[in-house]
Length: 87
Length: 262
Ligand SMILES: Nc1ncnc2c1ncn2[C@@H]1O[C@H](COP(=O)(O)OP(=O)(O)OP(=O)(O)O)[C@@H](O)[C@H]1O
Ligand SMILES: [Mg+2]
Image 1 (tube, rainbow over the protein chains, first blue to last red):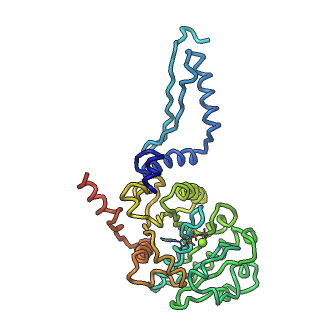
Image 2 (image 1 turned 60 degrees about the vertical axis):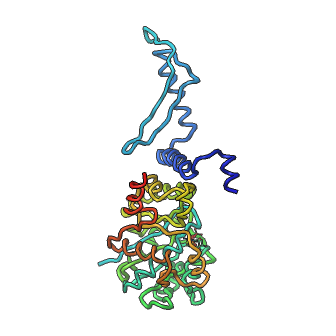
Image 3 (image 1 turned 135 degrees about the vertical axis):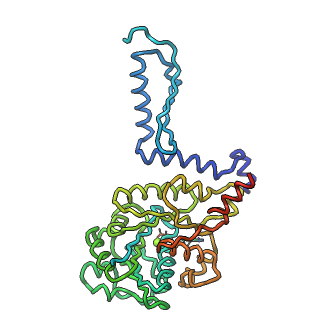
């Protein structure tokens, strides 16, 4: 039975899958940011960035990551072009 | 000196709060402490059957609070230990028929007479939970190694911290060492690092728990029981003793073994 489940979900120990998922979930629970708020934050960031540069909107990623003693906001943005003069 | 007021809570239901209260309380009573257990799960009382005291109930927690009886009248003495007693919850009332203030007052009155006051908290984070933690100075959070129990434990820890309950420790119940070994269950270390509260102890998944509940005799009375031994060492830790966490997947031996193997 477990063998079948393994094959369906791909190999890999489910304990570590659970740990990773919980890291993510607890972090969001603790700071009380809903996925909708993260989406709004992302859109606001795009808006601000777009005053200075042209960014690839579809590429923008915003994540909160838990370090050992701190939490970090990590964002990856693909920049197409930087404006010489801010608009 | 006033006794310790310990609330046992979890967020998620059915993870082992009542079992924990019965076993920690019984262990400390066996060490000659005066111990009282309060069932605050109004409407869904269970501590009485787990302790095997269901036939002796006359008055309950709500009767004390509403002044229908003196608190001594509602306390049921344990069958084996004369220095252990229990206050049952009301079965036909609702959780919001008592207030946090009333619980605080009762707890501090009891702590003047008893060395340990254990509070069996209902599942959830509503009024019943708020009442249960209101008078407590120490909290034991029970979780199992499952995602939903852990998530709820984290939420409860946040609420306890916000309520200024300062001493919080964690019990991991129903750990299945075999599953941890083959990687299909989060380990003690995984859970501790997620929740970042000190560990009081780990209880293995065990049929003995069911058997002892069937009989209404707490596990710690059985000297040969492994799960009982886990509860005994947790009670000792709660009482300030330093007892190493045993080596079968956590603690120093487990860690050493892994260092050597890896
Ligand atoms: N270590 C264990 N091994 C096996 N079964 C266990 C273990 N701990 C608890 N159980 C079983 O799990 C069930 C729930 O336990 P318990 O009543 O203590 O949980 P609870 O948190 O008080 O539940 P509730 O939220 O409903 O009050 C019981 O049937 C009990 O026998
Ligand atoms: Mg219970």
